[in-house]
Length: 311
Image (cartoon, rainbow, N blue to C red):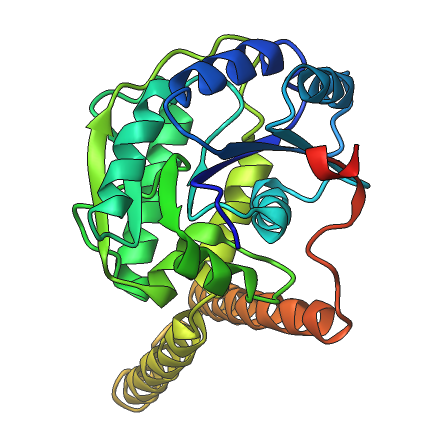
């Protein structure tokens, strides 16, 4: 029978300088728990992160190290951590010390009080303006397509009940988005306000490319609404084109001296050409995901796991 009260899952990428202090603070924060596990998933870091994880494991057997064979992305690394976790409640957090380990207990208690998932919210987010804007856009997308409650901030710092985690793990798609999966599973959500800290080391791994990837996952991963939008856009463009045809015919028959220039032709080509390419892009995104899923593209590949029961 599983007696692990809480599992902390942290995807790690190029964070060799923060791992030791992060582990120390989490272990201190969980000192009141009879049993816990701290799962550090190394997402094929280019630095010495895996060596630091191994050292942390040697110092404390509650620490589990998972080493991925190649970089798979944050959500995929989380799925790897979830797959080997045993806790009754699981807490997900970042590796950059912007989340306070002392707040883990607050999130844990909300799930113990009956909520399926508790997100951490931040009064002031100490991150780049670009990342703040991207988060707001992603939140709006989730409100429209997945009916996200307006008051919930989809933070990467959250606590999840075991039964919800089991359903998340059952998601077999090649492009998991944990927050999106949560929104398709349950509405029993809450959040608490905690402090957000400055990043201690380096710069955020979320560049524009990763932000765009996250946006596409949230937009196309759990809804066919974009395809329907493309249909309506195409229908609207057809109506617009038909109206223009009528206009030009009337101009021709009632204004024989009507000067037929190239401007209107160029405008129409640009408008309809852009609309067609946008629609094809949306369709192509779905087809690409279907193709990779049919070919069983793995979410992640685990090269090594170090844990106490393997000693």
